[in-house]
Length: 464
Image 1 (cartoon, rainbow, N blue to C red):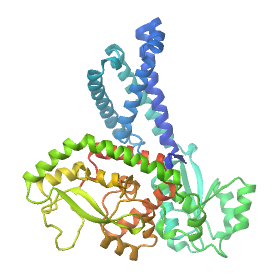
Image 2 (image 1 turned 90 degrees about the horizontal axis):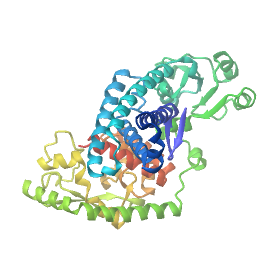
Image 3 (image 1 turned 60 degrees about the vertical axis):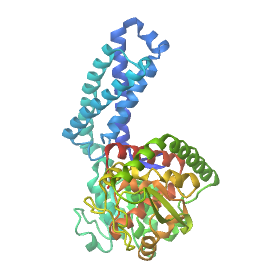
Image 4 (image 1 turned 30 degrees about the horizontal axis):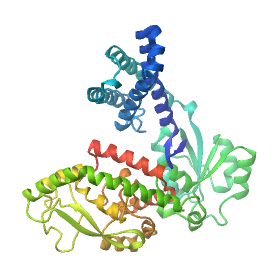
């Protein structure tokens, strides 16, 4: 099962693990505080800021665990990865507090509380994670589901259910009038679509996912209504399920009626005003704060290689409008003089020594704060690309031009979900994520994307 938070979808089990560990961390320090201070514990918690100090400790350790992917669904059942990452999170959290307490001694928790609290956290979370691993592997806590249909969407959904047992749904079989298209998957074929009711009763399924490509004259509407009303079976559209599982839209399987009548894809004036206000205020402040860093970078670029400090390139913005994007130059001057703009490789000979560092740390993108300030871009949105590339992709990928209905961004849902785009398939998947963002666009989702972007920057992921 997936839960919608901040206009994005998260596995309910991962959220439960995070909530449980938040309680365990806070409880560990509360227990140690009461044991260490005895009757004075109430005084410490109520009048000396003790509750706020424990809340800060809890928040920092949970963020550290999130940044080290301890709530990633691929890590939830891996005992070795859990142990290694948990120890790393505790170590990083302790280092953060060493620096924090040096700068702000008033926020400090006594060492006789901090060290035993950390030890208790390790013990309790270790026990909790073992219970989680056993619970996730238990068949008693898994919902049984059936898949109705075949084709690309049905295959993608089946693969998602099979490789992601942590969502708590087990696909027990499928029904299709053309079963040969699903032969490559380890699923039981339960008959044609008209045998829907008997297949549900036989399998004991409580959820039915409809992924039929051509529905007219094929979809057993009466049978679906009977299952939904008389047998308490949850009937779901395959496109909706795919969106919640993957955080993207199935571009090749989207129906025009779904695009027109589904919730979302509506940008209100208040949302646009809030995004613009946030862009102006934050970009203005960051330009002032980072100006010394940018001056230093400009000097280093000038000393490293001949050519201009700032790289200017035309990009496609909102409604297809062309604008000039500003970045620090990371390649040798004239590398793209012939008009070709091939994707940057890991060992690309066009990059300068300083440019490699700038790209890896994303510092080359600091001048884009000016683009944000003057209104070419927002902080969050689909990534803008050069006109030639965009025109080619519009011709080859359906709905690709829909990326232009909103302003582009420095970071975005597609950027935090996948890396650089090189092939046509890469760009098609990028569009799938961008359409999800446009459909669910909100300030809350923007804040989530910025939070994940900070994680990517700190861990040095995706830079090239």
